Image 1: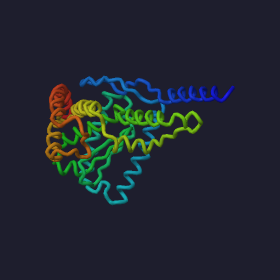
Image 2: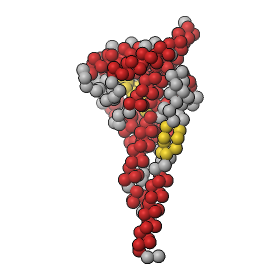
Image 3: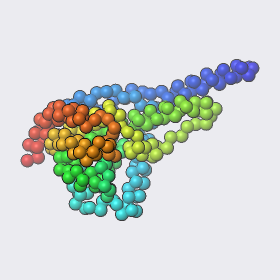
Image 4: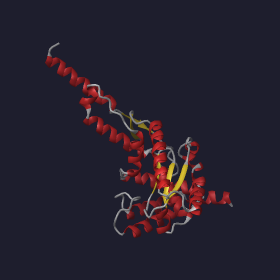
Amino acid sequence: MNGAVHARVGRWIAVALVGLLTACQSVKTTSTGVVGVDRQQRMSALVSERDLREGAVKAYQETMSKEQSKGALNTDAAMTRRVRAIAQRLTPVTSAFRPDAPGWNWEVNVIQSDQLNAWCMPGGKIAFYSGIITRLALTDDEIAAIMGHEIAHALREHGRERASEQVTQQIGLTGVAIATGNRAVVDMASMAMQVTMSLPNSRLHETEADRIGVELAARGGYDPRAAINVWRKMAQASQGKSPEWLSTHPSAESRIKDLEVYSQRVLPLYEQARGVRR
């Protein structure tokens, strides 16, 4: 086989390998719920749910250890109890979207910081920053709205979806290296941190999280209409700038309009849950 043929074969192999490694599968991560979130998602075979969850465990432990070393972890015992109590009501009702989710190894911590921020890593690793609670003077219903939104990202595996996009792009750019035997290695802990705290959520992800979030809050016995007030407070506090927890889109105005519709849709769930809890 001459050199030209070898080169063509090498290119064919490279194309085939890149195609194989960047292949995505259609995934249904959650049930639709009352809010009707039913979009099929595309996930890379290289980013498994299990691997990303394991990476999230490592990333979360590292983050909490860092905050503890600074003396910034769970410094306000009453606030920590309050946030964890809300989580104890929300995590069981995640079964409405994923039957496996209530059994996740949920962790909830509060970081002492002025940041307007909160997040949930894959697998249920939650962090609230004290600033979002104190600066916005959040009620329990409003904390539940934020927590429901963040949990929704984990239920829908938005982090895995974004990681799949990142890995696919990286492999597409390094196809020649892959074809010659230099295998791409994905650091899942780094990826979990990146998709949780660095990469902005898309408009679609934010809308899905808003809608699922109000349903989770309602099922947990928290007023879903509180989400509307959260975004009003957030818009006022940000003064036209995007704080850490807000993506650049959708705008506060458009998401408030959407939440007005969907909070009403799940209001019967809230009334039912509130009646049960009385």
